[in-house]
Image (cartoon, rainbow, N blue to C red; front, side, top):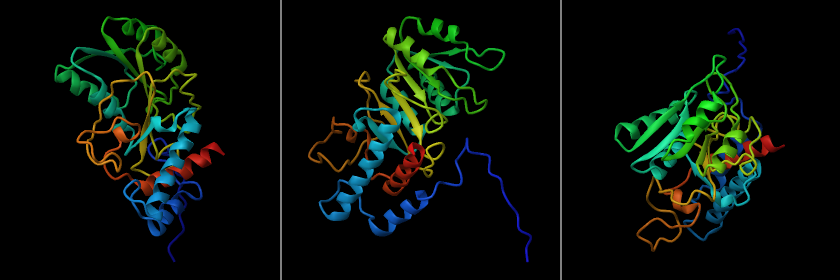
Length: 274
């Protein structure tokens, strides 16, 4: 007989494991007994798929204190959500302020847009104890032409929690859009998009929300009016249009969604809320 070994899993910052009871079961239950695509038919299982997606959307809205669940769109992860913002919001000549504490999901898209000559990026320094130099960030954000401030919520490398409410208040007072990379934040630390004055919140499903890989999303606040889709295609609604519909969330959810993953994510969010 092989000797029995026990693993103590600590890498939750990469992916949470094991998942709470019901998460994996919900994935397989959907795949086995529902299986249909939402918004692509009027039969029972297609309607059930749509209902289950709306349930997860509503649970996320409850978690983040979002009044209108349609302002939460699903993506395959936080990286896609962040890219949607960077490539869908920023235009030639815009300036962006961020920090030196960011994940490559923020750094690389911004560097690419700067390399193309589209934007200019300013980097707020960190202090000697690895915290954000908030005064430096505010100083940079006052530069003319700054459109977007983006910060992580919790640094994935150090675990430092950023003062998002203080940053959000500053951005609101100076008419700047505030994007939070909530990959490490969601489900781990309380988030209230209204009180924290967050305009855009990117999140992933497989970390602190205890869902499965391949799930994530983006909260889009009412102050963000001119965000262009990153992907174009079928939405299951307004198929008569040659362009993407204006309605949320359909405008940003082209293609067949990862419905079993989204259903499993809902179970993870239920567990967090409990």
